[in-house]
Length: 321
Image 1 (cartoon, rainbow, N blue to C red):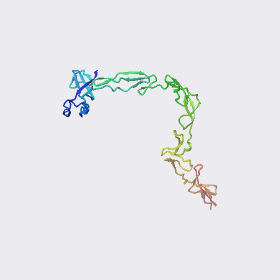
Image 2 (cartoon, rainbow, N blue to C red):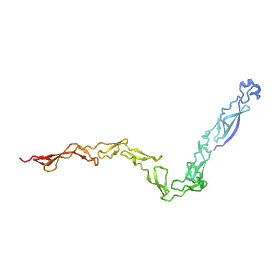
Image 3 (cartoon, rainbow, N blue to C red):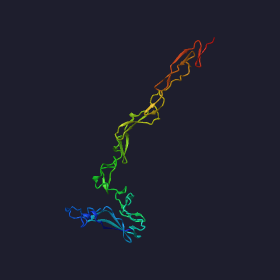
Image 4 (cartoon, rainbow, N blue to C red):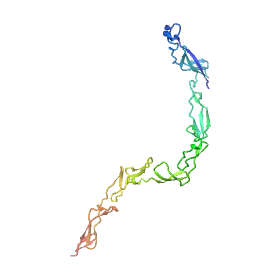
């Protein structure tokens, strides 16, 4: 460990030639009436002297800028003990020369109730700084490198319950507020305007009826509630999702930018011709129409008389000669 001792050193600055020419009696005149500069008007004390050895084992380090008194520069300095000797203004082979151990680690929480703090100044060994630390017990807990401040000083400070299912005022005990829970099934409202009806259960506000936004529901949109305002809005589902537009006469479609893109049901496969009775053949037209009730295809038909022949196997059969 190296010891520092602060001293004040006077460094004499020689008067300039110009001043000597103006006032041969000295470094300027002390009487402003004579028109000559004062003893410190031409002295510059900004240049800090080099460190110097003031003994075989003592190094003096100057600090600047200095101050001028009666034409002389005065600089503060610190004297450092050099364990391996001082030579040419440096501690010989000392890795701690010029090292100031005044940057301790940040205070930190050892556990939830203990804070570790470090001394402002440490010691240098082989160029590395080490700092003495102390552990402090935090009465109200430790968080983010600090002892937690007491939450309250009296019951009047306890007016901010942890939720809607606690009494609005609490009791201050050992710097902390304590609130009683409301009974289960007590009506409650949380901070979310999309939650309409709630009841307390174990200190939690359980929502029984959320906001109904189904008016916006559609094949490719879903009604949502905006939590900041409580208003409903339509939210578009992902493109490519399968959708049904509710029309029995359209095929299942694909969502595209909130719109269900569908194709109509094609009615181009009529039933086979059939015999209504032994003399009548029913022939269906090629194109039908879709029934909007169930999505089935309905085809018009014509009944043909097979007399004097007969109708069999969906065809008119010629009569006997």
